[in-house]
Length: 232
Image (cartoon, rainbow, N blue to C red; front, side, top):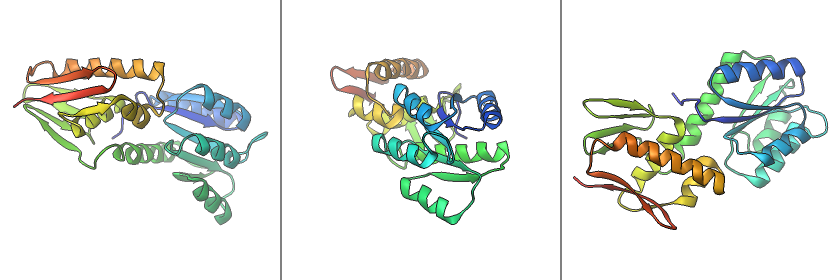
């Protein structure tokens, strides 16, 4: 299961009660939610932050969900889009798919269904990162990307979504340089000072997990990125 830690959701829903309910439910499940009540507010919020997934109501004032999605798609082809709609017409589904929707859910819906669809979207998204390989052996460490677990016979660590994604990319580039900008755009969706500092923090965390094996090193390659060195 994909862990919700660090997953940021842009939620655009003009129904006041439903918006508050969704915000509360998703926040309790561990997601970081930014709630907007119309399309224009959501577009401004999107441009001020970095998001892992967008949940967009189709019928909103000022800027509807489809128009908002088109603007987002002009900026990013990677962020998953989930549409909410009271209209369950074939035409709406086709329009959403043309824009690049990852999923589409008709109102009314159960909160559990929304959560399951979100988890499925995030699994597909992170599965696209780097290779299709999901199991790695790093000397005494075994790394299971799908279960986000790093373990030795003596101990195990449950990784966050971003920790697992970053370690996977390092493993796929083992003994070679993982370009900083590649990792930032694949995992953080943005390459700037703040996301770069965030990635540095995650690198430090991964080093702590791996410190019991001095044959494994995550090396900082100045001006380029990081290199996972594995000596048997």
